[in-house]
Length: 355
Image 1 (spheres, one colour):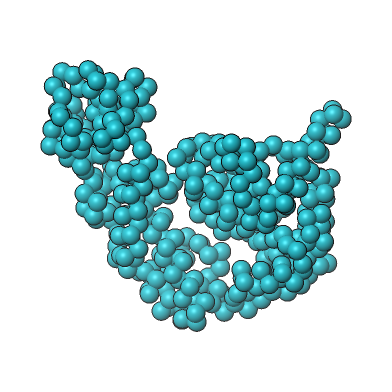
Image 2: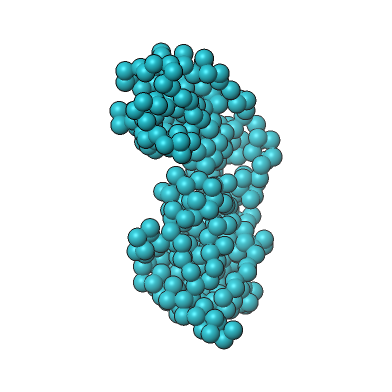
């Protein structure tokens, strides 16, 4: 990882006077006479040196009383998003190569450290983590298509088996994933207040909770979600966990603690932990969740993490609503989201009265 580069006042002034784009995101230029701040690359008429102040970020400039330039929009997400999109395209095209921050910086004409910081600010993961996730996606696709482990490994951009095995991304070895029958997932389906609920589990814990209209629909979803697994019905073995879910869905038990065996990116894990911190009977907005994980700009990414929640209800993504209070969407149907929130609110109110 590149070390943070500290620029002197003179270096910042020189970058501004040459409209050097590689320093966009490293600092902003504030003009005291107009009370406006800009990117270093802004093409507006340059101010006199004595009228300039430098700040490390737009938020610092705004806290000092400056407002954003309308010409270069230094405080918008659009610029950073476009740069990160360009970086992602470069990574996708070079998964077979050793990708360095220096190469990424050269691609977008920015300082490598600034690329790293901007990428994490927008996506909440590093370029390295993004590259690993993309390689893993390719590996799983090739293994499902029947490629050998060795071919799939190297065709996906992994330079060695240790690069994958050392991180345990898959929760199982590539060989086990490819064979499919080597991993057993037990499942049970039961009628509940919201229609039907399916619970699936590995030997480590619950890997999926699905809601649906019929048992057949839910079993079909499980087969689609785990095409390489040996799915086996086990109503008796999973009976205790199913009963806990049924009590929870009926509003009889506000606390649901089940062992989980789910895969997540670092960002998804942070979002899902924040969801589980939402008190029973309450809701939070997507913006509030983004702020809770320390990344207020990642509202859309938070919504995406909610949509990819593999264990409905256990990770309560139904408790997240829009900023204006409207419910937004829900993977298992808006009617179920309404029913869940109503049940939780009523149960929480009754519990409060009993205190």
